[in-house]
Length: 234
Image (tube, rainbow, N blue to C red):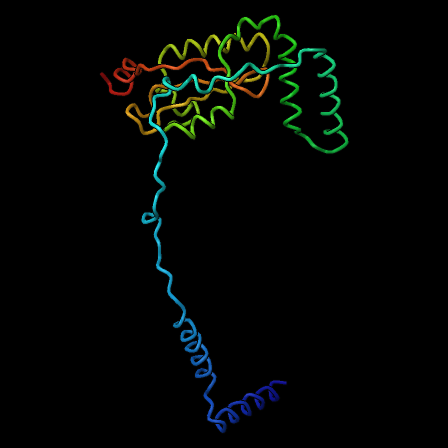
């Protein structure tokens, strides 16, 4: 087998020589060169580095959050409080079928709806504890599109909230404990690049009754004594 292969290679080299061809290495080099020549005629594209890319200009209006908080206030959602216990039974049955028959261990939408319904059972009894204005994700999105503001996680920007905000959080948590075991989510709408960057927040808290937010407050004063004592060591 090896002898046959050796003869075949010798014949190929001889044929290449007779026809004015080249050796194997020359054939490779010619192929490589022709490839380079083929690309020479194509227009070259200038390299654009990330730092050279043109950044779109932010045309949003500069405003403090407290100046536009009224823009996100929405009408109170209409909750279906008729026969809530029956609604709970229906959702529980759906969850059971999804888990046992469809092998869906964590049907998140249904589990979330179940918690909302459980809280609604107690809404009428404790409604007077939830007197904050309401907003929605749609309203917040519209606000951020129009004004130079950011919607941020409370944990990352808690240094920017005054003591009045902490007081409202305490009241809200106490109210929520009356109707649900769900953990509340807190968010802030802050000044983003304006005169008081990351200051003057609007404080939002997730509703235990549905997919909307309570506006716990908006402030214009800075947290001066906390900044001075804790963060500047005075």
